[in-house]
Every structure is written in C-alpha cells, then in structure tokens.
Length: 208
Image (cartoon, rainbow, N blue to C red; front, side, top):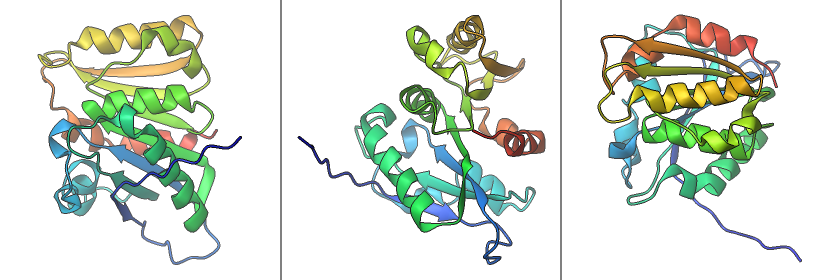
C-alpha cells in the first residue's frame, strides 16, 4: 500500500554567476530562516540572512541557494516533508551536484537543520546550524555528517549549552563536528557567521 502526501512550500532561489555554463553542476545550499520570518510573504526573505549577504556583493558564492518559507504557526520539523520534497524538486530541475547538498539554518532554522539532517543523514554533505540545539538522543544519526556549528556565548534565547551538549553528543559517536563560539555575541550571530568566507570554502570541500 502506498500513501501519497501532497505538500507545498513557497521559496526563493538564487543561481550562481556562471550558471549559464551547461557543463557545470553546482552545490546546493538550503537556508532555513528563524521564527520571525514565518508567514506568506516570501518577498520578506529576499534581503534576509544568506540572500542579504549575497545581495551586498561581498561574497561570491558558487552555489545554488534555496530559501523556503515556513508558514505561520508552523515549525520546520512540521515542514520536514515539504522541505525534503522541495530539495528533490530542485535537484531534478536544476544542475545540482547531488554530492554537494548543504543545510544552513538560524535559530528556529538551526533546529530545523538538526531535525532534517537527523531524519535524512545521507542526503546532506554538511550542515551549518546557528544559535540552536538538537536532539541529543539522536546524535548518533549524524556521525557521518560534516558539521560546523556557530553560537553566541551570551545568547539569552538559546543558551550556548544547548549547542555544546549536542556537539559533545555527536563527538561521543565519533562524529565530525566543529563549533565556533562568539564570546561577545548573543543570539543574533547570523551576519558574523554567514559573512565568513572560510565557511563556504569549507563547504565546497565536503562531499557526501
């Protein structure tokens, strides 16, 4: 017996410079936003987070970037099937290197990154959760996933222990996790983390 579920999610997509070259395949970044960006106005995401950094022209990212929008009163774990279907659709319709699919998420989106990767660990070459924590009891699922996490030491919304506890749990299962803590920053570390060119160089080195 086969059960079919219809899912729908709005999203923005950005193609890299050089995408017109039909012989190239590109890494894919899925960026999951924080709680205050939920809703039905997809345009509010056009100058937010990773797209904002890209719009400023300081970074030239050789990736296809997809930014879905979580509906009002929903959370990313509730949209897991929709995001997974979106990734499959983008991979089918665009020139994506299937070995280079990455997840980045901030705050609520960071929790979404942990959740999606735990449920689909073979799908992602690397994940980048910001200002969040994950399901410690399921950390073993991520022992073969490359992880670079970011958190502010003075975060009074999601205490830094939520992140360090998750990283420690992954390391106990011989996972590959690195953690950058900003000693003088609170919850909003998005610009500091996403402006880091080293992050994208590291992503390009990760393959599933």
